[in-house]
Length: 197
Ligand SMILES: CC(C)(COP(=O)(O)OP(=O)(O)OC[C@H]1O[C@@H](n2cnc3c(N)ncnc32)[C@H](O)[C@@H]1OP(=O)(O)O)[C@@H](O)C(=O)NCCC(=O)NCCS
Image (cartoon, rainbow, N blue to C red; front, side, top):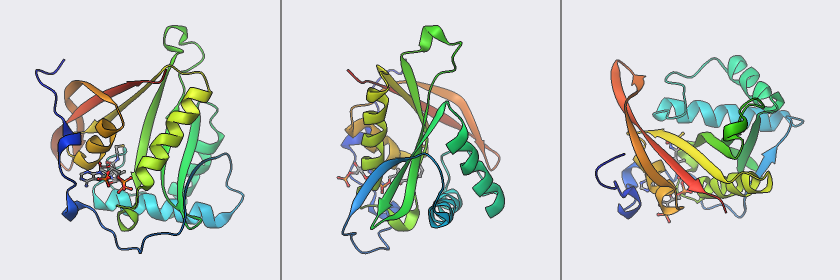
């Protein structure tokens, strides 16, 4: 347990870190994507993920894979039964996503908890509320699936994300001192949970 709460939610938005390159969208939508029937969705998602990784990552990759590898990865995500892909659209185009990881079937003791991972919005689409919408959709979906708890973890450097999670009621319960290695540096990871009922 940490000694004192970090309270990222109380921090003002770091405007320098928010790139609102795009004009405010006419429509915002978050939805579950079960397959890539529209190739434009695949291209937009891969492009958004690549841009987010180049800007600082925070969802696994440190360097973006080649476009074909990225596309293969997302097709795999859509196929894996333990994962659900939630995408965020602005004016119909995908600019961000998150994944809901369900516990494996043999994990009876933790069958009540899902994990939110790989949550990002492309740098050029930030500041319009898309990440919050994706997060709320993921919570809605987790509740609908009967999960009682949503867990997530984040690198200490992702302060914008921590502000969002804390503002949405996620509780910081611990810090892993050696959570990730990023360009030769060891970074801490902050662990959060939220009760869904
Ligand atoms: C964190 C991230 C997803 C936010 O995306 P976004 O679409 O710009 O976020 P939203 O516009 O929905 O912001 C919602 C709230 O989050 C908080 N927030 C988001 N970015 C912030 C920042 N840079 N500084 C402070 N607060 C921030 C604010 O509370 C904001 O509410 P407000 O606009 O009313 O102040 C995006 O910056 C990102 O992809 N970062 C890199 C990946 C990452 O950190 N992923 C999370 C861990 S896997």
